Length: 55
Image (cartoon, rainbow, N blue to C red; front, side, top):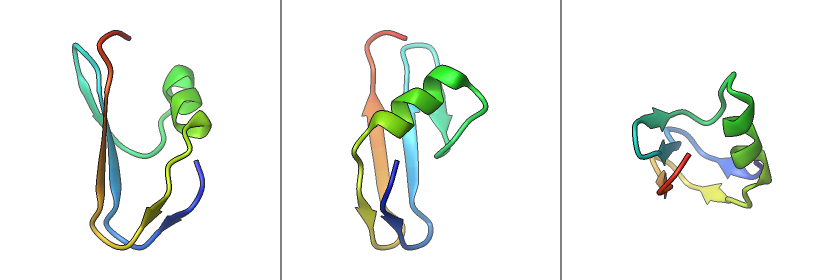
């Protein structure tokens, strides 16, 4: 993932069985989703939610 500018921004991945509140993880599949996403966050205190029907 690139272009995260500002402070207090966060990304929430919402899966059917759990919610992950972080920008990076030690979980390889989660990191692939984040690194392959083209998300640009500019400003402060923004929140991005990504909902998935299956894991």
